[in-house]
Length: 415
Image (cartoon, rainbow, N blue to C red):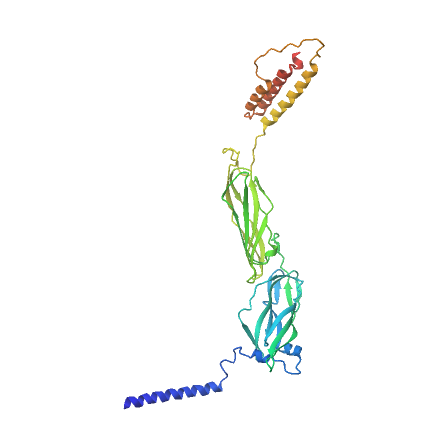
């Protein structure tokens, strides 16, 4: 009996508590009042005699939202153009904002996820019309013109027939105060880049061959204004020759500020074998977050240049110095050929003419070494002579002996 009475008492207490909570909830504002459950369909109906344009303007408005109203020249600025509507409507941009004082980049956006904004006690659906990254080209107070939108509203009248009306919506304009960059001072290499960047350098291979093409890649990574990043000055080692670079941009436009990488590919050729170092490259940029100039520097690149095709393996040189032997053999060989032709011409002129009836005797066949062959063999030996006086003396004797052997002439002192 006692248990039954206790059970009934507990149930009555629960009913009493629930009733008390219900009365308190009825006295307080609804917990769903802040949620955007306004009846946009009912609100879209155009009443008889109601002005369509005024209906649109009183229920739809556009606005430009800036991430900041003061920035540095060259700093990335985010401008988002919103449309807020409490009507069941479709909208199209009829005039985009004119931003002649800025360099603009369209950024990606999405309206797939519903967004709502509550203002003056009313709920509005929030649509993004345009999202841009703006970079000021000059300092001063720079205007951002309004965006103009045409809104078309549809609804069903009391007979169930579809009706529509439209109206124009103009956003507010905006003004951005752009500050000039501070004096770079000793950072004379500043090229105008504003943001936060890092730089690295790499080769397509740690070992390359002399005389063959190789590629040096300079990579800038970071976020901000990539437009003013240029290929840095390369301090090539002696015997290296660089050529025109190509650029590859990998910039992400789905985030702000735009981020990614900028790649400069620089082909080059190393003429000599040996161990070399390519000195670091650097870029000076202005960091708008900290309001100061900063420098990004790459690391030293060590590279070994192996002998190329046709280059002896023992011709390693000291980096920065070049020593090459003059190609005496081809030059003197050509000189001997020219002198031989000249000597033949002289002998032909000295040969007496043959008279009619005169018998020409056949020359005796004598085995001998031709002067050209003998001179060429001697010249090959001269190529290994390093002493200048010895080389000159032997060269004179070789050439003089060749002329005597070919023409039969002697020096004036021998006559």
